[in-house]
Amino acid sequence: MKVLLTTILVRSGLLTHVLDLARHLAARKVRVSLAIPKTGNLNNDPTLLDPVAGLPVYVYRAATDLVSFAAEQGVELVHAHSPRTFEVSAEASRRLGVPLVLTLHSVRDWSGMYADR
Image 1 (cartoon, rainbow, N blue to C red):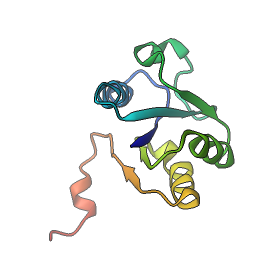
Image 2: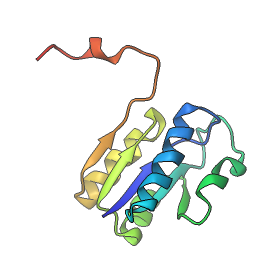
Image 3: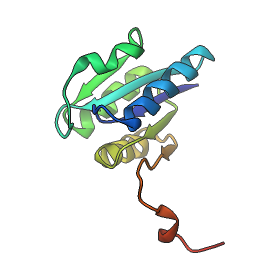
């Protein structure tokens, strides 16, 4: 399987989680790549990506760029980790016909947003 993780470049638990997940997936022979928006980041320090050196990392400007990269990578699943990457991730998922996973990283109590089932 080929997974695309989208995130923003910010020194936080969000990025720590994404980088750990990328390394974990790669160690288990899942082909993984990361995509980061050119704008909308809280920190543009590329050394934050040192833990995933060797994995494909793409910096995109628009959804069309992300879709092209994802198609070239043969992505079979898009996993968005930030509200700032959700729209372009959803667009890539739709255009490529692959599943989209959204992980909500926050201290917000998201359970109140959904009815009990």
